Image (cartoon, rainbow, N blue to C red; front, side, top):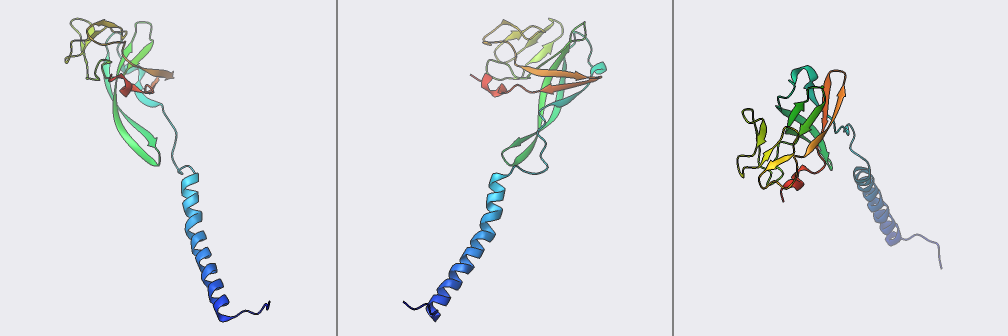
Amino acid sequence: MRNQLNRRGFVLGAICGFASFIGAGLGVPALRYLLRAPEGVRKTEWIDAGDLADIEPERPAQLALTHRRTDGWKVLTERIGAWVVKDPEGGITAFSPRCTHLGCAYRWAAASHEFVCPCHASRFSIAGQVLSGPAPRPLDRYEVRVEGTRVWLKPPQAPEAAHS
C-alpha cells in the first residue's frame, strides 16, 4: 500500500475534520446546558411572611405571599396564600388556604370562631382540626420559623394532593 495522499482522501479528511469541528462546537454547549444547574438560581424554599408584631393573637390573618421556585430550568414567581394564627403564648401556626376535601378556599368566621369552607360546609377549628363536614383530614400546615421579629413559612410539600 502506498501512503500517498490523493485528492479524494484529502477532501474526505477535510469534510470529516470540518464536521467534527462543527459537532464539537454545537455539542459542548449543549452538554454544558444539560448537565449544569442554572446559574443565578437560589434554592430558597422559605418565604418571608411579615412581622410577628402584625399578627394578633387568636385572630387568623390571611396573607398573600410571593414565592419564587425553580421548575426545571424555569424560575417561576407565584402568589400563594396562607392563614397565619398566633396563639396567646406567641406560637405561630400557618395553614394552606385550601380545604382538604376538594381544595376550595375557606374563610375565617369570627362569629363562630372557626374556619368554614363554603362549598361543602366543612368546618375547622382555629388549630386546623376537622370539626364537621366531608373534609377527610385537618388543614395542611406550613412549616414555620421565627427569626427575630420576622415570620418565615415553608409551603407543604404537596398541598395539591389534598384534592382527592
